[in-house]
Image (cartoon, rainbow, N blue to C red; front, side, top):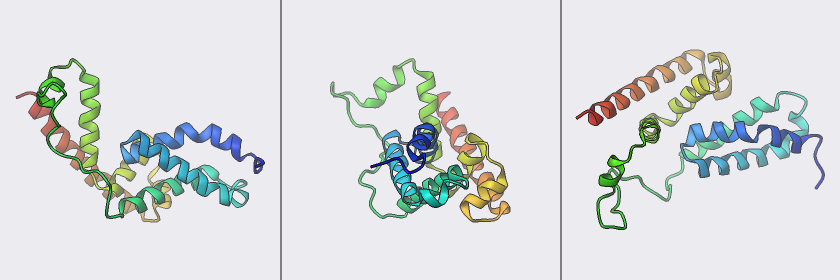
Length: 174
């Protein structure tokens, strides 16, 4: 199959940022790569119409729409639990995870758990506004909503994050 006027080069240049966006939305690297591949496959079919415009924005829109539409499905295959399973040695996993001197990993995990408490739309807004550093107007255009809705989602999502991270900090210091 021939390169459709620079599509291969575009994919090579944007793969990392597309996966980073997807990881920020899904909080799962494997799922994020699947999401990025699906979005790029969808872009391929529209490439001739999009290439001369703003393919980055179009790709971002595809990733967001695909993520949000997948979130609406009923079955996810796996369900998170509050308790970790036992380790191979028969000890509860919590016993060996708390003893590890891995503060950065623990902090990242706490943030990931807090982000899971934020609704998908709020997570999208937070990620686009603060991780991708997009202006409110552009986020509103991507999501097809008003700037006020973007501000509302960001405010509510950040409040949920603050509360979850405060609760985590209190648990750690007990």
